[in-house]
Figure 1 (cartoon, rainbow, N blue to C red):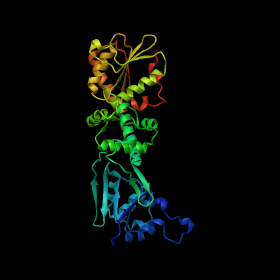
Figure 2: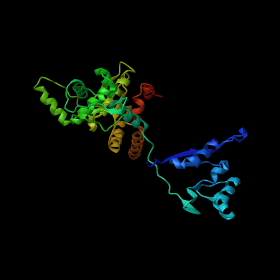
Figure 3: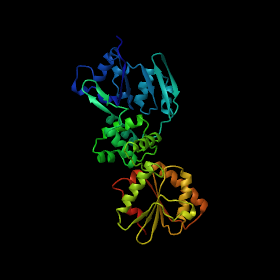
Figure 4: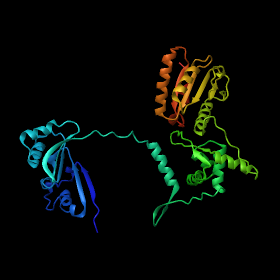
Length: 376
């Protein structure tokens, strides 16, 4: 039976050196690994900025050496002796440039220089999205003491019980998974399994706009047809209609709720006529007690088009502020750049103030909405 190969990488390997002051009789940890590891399928990769820190017994037993630029004379001398370099070649180690390395290995004992191509790494991982996917995975599986993780049962043909309750709730109200679970008094795992059934039946689909860690679902055409069929059987489900999708609607509702909590005299208009003569229909208009009017827009698509609309809204008489809420920080920066381009073209110094907020912050309970409306 062939042994599996394993590679053990150790950085700052000198920390594993034997303390000679202890008068140890046996070999050091690394010496033992080098002596017996290979026959058991263990390969070792050691790295250190100071080559002279490596035990002599190990240094003479290394099969491949990869050297970057060094400055320590003791290290350079050791490399020169072990790799058979001339004095001039040894000095070149101090002149190695970025991404240049000196290599020698058993199959090619003559050292040679290599210039490594620059690696282009992907953008920074979205930790929030990773956490959300991990949570959904844990909700979809269960632990079996004998076999480990197993998928929880899903019954695609089921349209009763919790599956039906989740479906009705998605149809009638826009809310997060946790909010829906609390309303229906079910755990998150039950909600996840119910949504899997509904997705398998193509009754719902996920909104492609995600706000922070939140994701939302909408009833599909097939799901709407099923609801119409159920009316003949006495089951009436009211479908909530969105202006621009559930994520957009949820963010608008949360903004209205949070701002309205600041002052009971605040009034909101969903179908305000304030901009109708400009052929604009704002998502929300806030009317404050002193007559101040604030337009609130939720923007998820068409950055350039929305930037032009924001600029026109800022120029409407009677509007003192425009608030734009976007899904994330990346879109916030993109919208700000687009607005700057529009404002330069308009060259209007009388525009109302503009505040751009990303959902990740303004959805937080700790967000200070008062500071948004503070006036000089």
